[in-house]
Length: 123
Image 1 (tube, rainbow, N blue to C red):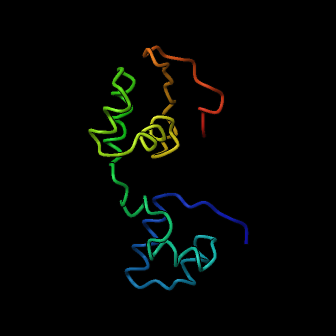
Image 2: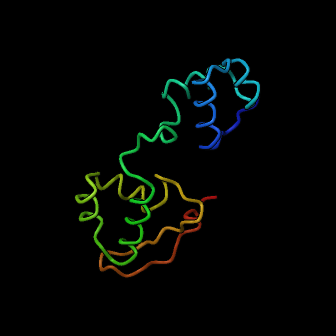
Image 3: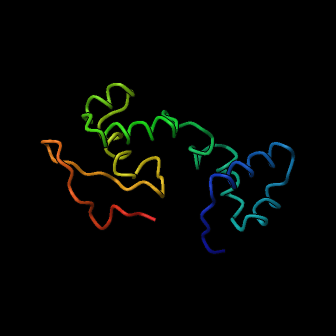
């Protein structure tokens, strides 16, 4: 069976259907994945974001990105939102909390904007 990437909505639907009594085998067939993927989703071992276990909400992430675009320091944002600077850089480079419409803003140490790199456009 070919690998298939499920959307967050599909993952949430799988969890709801399983909680209401749907069979794992039926869910796997319906979504075109193997049974172990369904077990991983239902148990929370995979796709934790769909369960809402991220430390930040997407509203907070949008706020972080807007504030960084306005010139706030990464270290200050990381301290305020209680995440490490590595996580903050991942958010700002759209590697964590991926948003297909967000284009990362690069800045030098003086706070001047730099042009985006070709790989900054993930999609």
